[in-house]
Length: 67
Image (cartoon, rainbow, N blue to C red; front, side):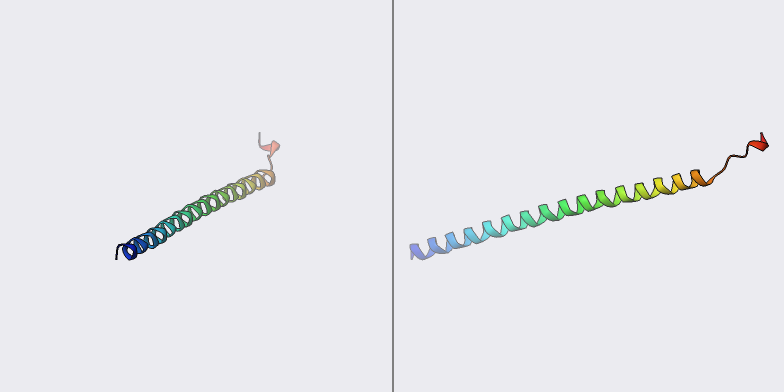
């Protein structure tokens, strides 16, 4: 009877530890993926904004005759 209880306890412990480590791995990788994709989209938006500003500045012409 004791051996059956001990076997069930060991199998349950191994299963619980495996599920816990799998959960930790999934949480860690999804956090990293979301963090880095957020950083990439932020840089992309900033670069697009700076490109629009550069284009507006290059298209504007200073009128020397007004001064």
